[in-house]
Image (cartoon, chains in turn yellow, purple, red):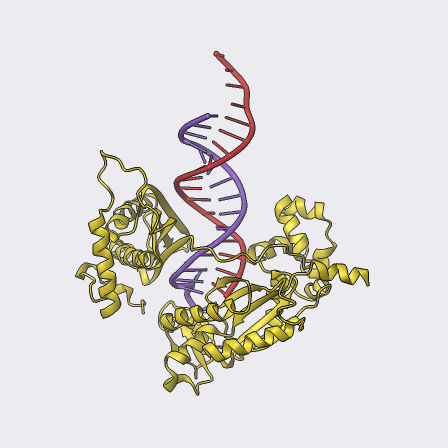
Length: 413
DNA sequence: TCTGGGGTCCTAGGACCC
DNA sequence: TCTGGGGTCCTAGGACCC
């Protein structure tokens, strides 16, 4: 009895909310006339290109289709499926309104991605009249459905790991709560690769040591685990496979980086064409950066070679920038260095912007009298004006001729 | 079936400063 | 003349997640 009370006293109440096939639901909302009666929907790239499945309707999943699968494969498995592009605007809108609803229900909401969030309801017992966590979860589910139209699933438990794992038992449109004290048994019934944070590399590493089941993993002493993985990772995994997770549900901070990348319909080896493609990515990333209200100090250019090797080059500036001109000037140099290092056809090019500072905070680093600024206030005003025009008339309205993607890049949109 | 695009976090080595 | 650590920033790469 005292044991139970002790558990109750420091027990957290965590919910994990996950939108069921978010991109499919949003695609239907964006085009209900065509899709609302459709059972087989695939969201992602076009099947004739190099696209993959971003999200598959539950109907398609019965045919073995899953996200990240090549779209061409998915269409072969489920030929009757309707293939649609990613409904970006609807996803952003629904993601925003989902957050709004959740904030009404929990003191701390942490958005984990566009379609999922963690809620910490610890300390709300009285407010919720001591109703079971599962009951609260069902009421949140109904509120989300009413205010956004979205079907969501909720998992609950005493920590983030358990709550998130529980969600997969709730799908679709259900609720699954793991009671306090049940964490170890619950996680014990899963596979190693189900653990959040265990990916293909770690799974392979464990497999090489003969560890293929959760039961076997738990039987490994921590020092042995440490000799395999190092102290830190061993401690982490030792706790994780027992359902122990102290990580807090932290309120959202701003983003840390903004990027844009594209895979070509066929590999590119011509530097001029690569530069043109790079410029288009710079325009996308810079526009997103300004829309989110940031300046960036670090510019990274990434190439994926035809043999699938990723290479990147980055430069951190003294001064934070946000215009295409300033970013492209650096990015072009970085691309040159990458090409010098290895001159091989590329299948992807991208640009990343990091070391971000909010627009409100003074963007200038060291204002040198000698060096001219990377971009002037006039440059920035011009960029913002063009953002407004693009918003009004479409993103291609203002794009100069040399910014149009090369013909070989037909896969985009 | 050749394998997207948006992110976050971690590591390891080197530069540089105290 | 030789020998230190520690802290922070930067860079490149990789694992992982949705």
